Image 1: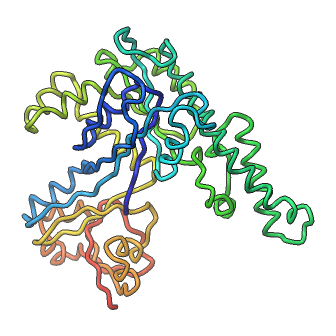
Image 2: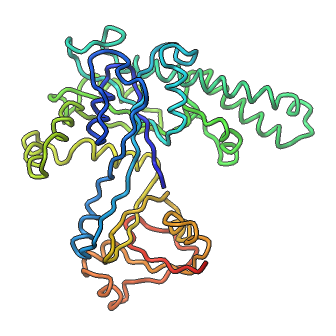
Image 3: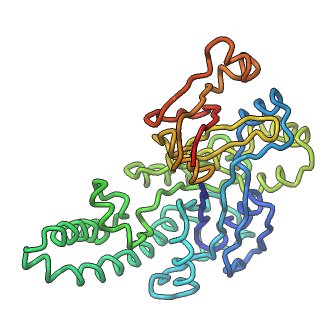
Length: 366
């Protein structure tokens, strides 16, 4: 399943530098606003040590990790919801993303211009929140007008439900909160699904700090943590410039040496992608054979036929059963044959809920 994350933030907060670290596609990184005019799109492999371990055991012809599409979206300014700057184009690009990576400048540097003249990540966050909320409010108001008459007459119960859901979202947005703060049931979410609201998307705040603050954070990060404590959001501290240096190193050994010198266990971009998975409630299962070892992304809670459908829709339609081994059993015993021999290969049916790390084969009939 395709996963697309949009990197957003005010101009000059480090979005393009972070994008360059994440992707082979190179965005222009310059010390002036709007250096990224069209959204740059790149694909990054999801780091997963388990895939490498399975490949060591199986020795396949190909190794295929799962991927995430990263979109570097042009910087936002006040008034974007009314078309200021690159507003409408920016907002349209966000609608296409599954999650938002909101980069906040949490470092002081007189040599890097701030669009508002001072470093205040909480104020920066509020600017973007406000613009997204205003745009969502437009969408909600437009749909409210369509349902208002039917809802007030009261004969159409479905129309009343939709209208009441819209009112609830409108009140939340007008209070200065994002739509994700509005506690909605699944049936209510269906009422607003067609609006593709910007502020209902899951968000991760990426605090871009200087090298000295890479491990411990700083006062700017503390202020962001306080500001988002009531939100259901992820936060990650990263040094985009240092990540850029790591990404430029050619060998794995060089990167490990650099990380060791900095007292870090892994690159921040690895943590970012893993956190994005957590944010979207995703997990991974594997297929392992001599032709290829491959990772597949699914939603947590997927049953075996749904997981099979990620490979091909025919697999889901004609699902018969799944052969399942846990990652731990497979790697401990060393092979599928060994798992089968000691009864660690299970046959599961349509109601089986796939666990993270399962190694699976599907039997189907079209």
